[in-house]
Image (cartoon, rainbow, N blue to C red):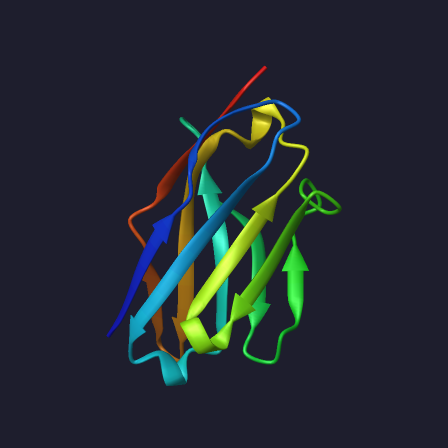
Length: 115
């Protein structure tokens, strides 16, 4: 089992910044990719960014150049630095971790961007 706990969401004005954190615990040695997804009201959950065990990153086109995903292996934590936030970034952000055959989710953290 893997447990994921997100933090760092909140209310920010358009153009501002936030940093999300996700701490993983449990059977973390077998995780091969972690990432952030988001879900806005009445919309499907969508990928924001992922980072592999080796450090390779992948971003949704809508956040490229504005968001940065990173990891601190010593703290079992991944981060999402979000800059130049837009109203359309408003959503619940979920941390995700993948092991072979398993897909884990955090409880989500709300990000609201006011215009």
